[in-house]
Image 1 (spheres, helix red, strand yellow):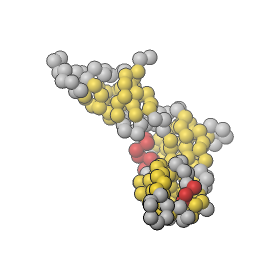
Image 2: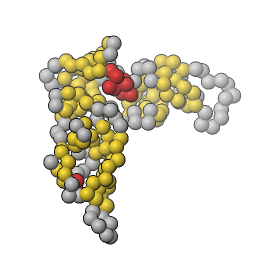
Image 3: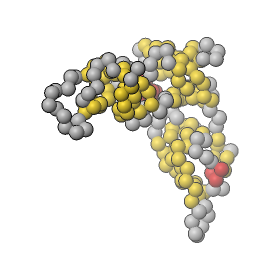
Image 4: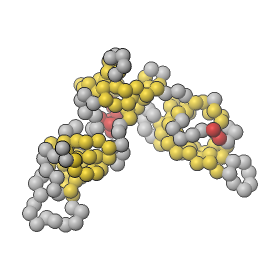
Length: 187
């Protein structure tokens, strides 16, 4: 058990039998009354965000999660297959639990898989990733409105809006949190 006043950003907590990650923490010490903390918690199973206020003396159960480097092997049907980089043990995760993440996974790449009670509960993606554009419409000559964009499809099936000058076969950098184009990557 941990007191609410000792909770830091990045701490994992068990709330209503679900694992939560503390995404934001704000300590408030009002002029009157006792101090409290405002927490923004992310459910590690569902991805839902919960905002909670607790008095600093309240206690909550802290849980230990393990980060494992795992290689993404492939997806088939309803399962995503990974291999632990240390033990070479293979395991599968339900695809429906990670629908948002699926469009960023590239076969053969290594990702950090968060494990709790020997079960995978989250896949951590790098903040920015490089992808190859597989489908892109050609820009129309004279279509030069400032900030104009077009949709393209990336190698994983993810669709992103990019500037008009991006062509099929080029590599681009994408922000995995906002799903937005960052810049063209020269190789």
